[in-house]
Length: 235
Ligand SMILES: [Fe+2]
Ligand SMILES: [Fe+2]
Image 1 (spheres, helix red, strand yellow):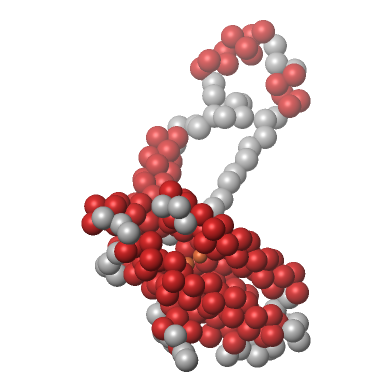
Image 2 (cartoon, rainbow, N blue to C red):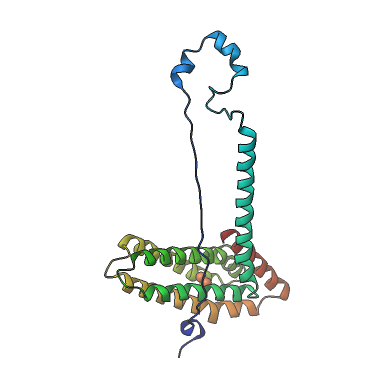
């Protein structure tokens, strides 16, 4: 019989993440600094263009623009996180949030399985997206839900589930190593999807309902809040 987890074919999609970074370095003019005389040194306080860390006359506007850019970047990232996690928190309780994330991961697997060996770029992009989604999801479970399970004397299941997360990471490692044009790529993805599907099934159909049943309303709200907070920083 098809279960809720195994039979689900969600078409939700995730926003791709855009990151940017950059750094610039400057080097000091060594020869001029070693030949500098005492007179030069006495004048150095009024001359800052020889310093490796001199900002020059235009430092004010440049520094202001850099700080403004950083502030905009931080605000945009914060907004993106809030949006992403906000969308998930609308799903309800912690177990519903996690079930929605299972759907999202399984939908990415389905897109991967619909590719052929010529679509190497698409395969790499989908694998990156899947890796990010599973990383965030596993972090929420490993930092909040599994510890709460252990606290509720459910350590055997928590340890089993956390052990499976290790094999999920192993699949990601193997897929990255084999290359997206490998003839065994699809078969590897199929095996990987099966593990994630049965893992999600155990959580959604057995472990989480039993654990939730024993929680007070307050404890349930606390777990939801902690899952949301962790997911926010991982988004
Ligand atoms: Fe899990
Ligand atoms: Fe999960």
